[in-house]
Image 1 (cartoon, rainbow, N blue to C red):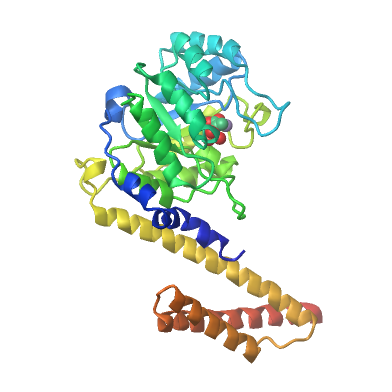
Image 2 (cartoon, rainbow, N blue to C red; image 1 turned 60 degrees about the vertical axis):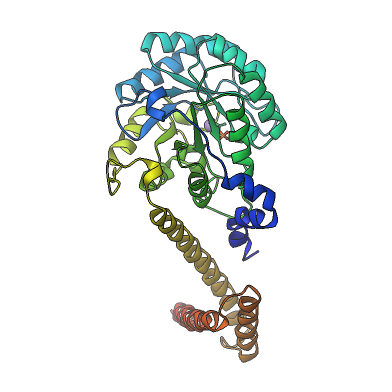
Length: 396
Ligand code: PEP
Ligand code: MN
């Protein structure tokens, strides 16, 4: 379990190595896309898409979207058909809600984006003047489903955004992009909304930033939008995720907002009021890319590799933190059972096995041995600290 995080993190690389076919496809994705600013009118980067998770009534939609327009949000969003884990949950108002959306769109004169999951949704959405379609995470995951949608899109000139699949599988994400592209769609963007995972995380869906970063290395001209709402799961984390996305030079943000988030019929905890969105947007630090005139595709390879290295380091530190908390638990157990902190057999075993593992992975075993010496020193220090603290507490 300890290594689950690392192995999940390396999942997309492993698949590539295991499967030359996938690797070849992934290395050769050359898409002739229309640039984002040619099909969405936005003032400046980042493009902001916002609106409720679900359209719940015409009044809810109108009140929320009016406030968003006042914030200069570029594109509105609303869920019309909601993919829910269990039946009998609120599944969206469907076509009825499309009529509200049309009224709001016409009154506010703003573009609207909607999730579609099958050809009927596409037909209805287009009939009601929806400007941008997106494929949700539960759709991207299924190639049959994506192909059905791609077939329905043939001959239609509509922008399509593709969320990442729920599982951390870059090839599947790229496959969905290719299917939609092969249908003739040239106005495309991807949305990064995080991945389902068994590992515990403060977020609802772990971001695993390495995957979208890698997607950009394969398709450098693909616009990328971050959806902090579905990564976070709770509104308190929206700011940090949005900032991270901007630091990684994402093109835009999709953030769910609702006039009364706590009463929302879906995703209540992660939605913010339009005022809340205003605070998030005004706290964002827009960092200037080194050479402002350069396009995303021109950011040099070194910068991308450095971003990947930063991300790996963050994950490494998180894993070390998890290790240290396990050590603390073991220490507590030792204290209760009067076992000494340092046990030479256990230490020798760790020292030997880790060096062996490293060697098998074609890494320098002395390097790993050095790292484990430091880890061991810190682990003894921490355990001594915990025991001393407990003993002081007990004598009080
Ligand atoms: C949504 O955007 O409301 C949604 C259902 O998102 P996802 O597909 O990312 O779960
Ligand atoms: Mn939602």
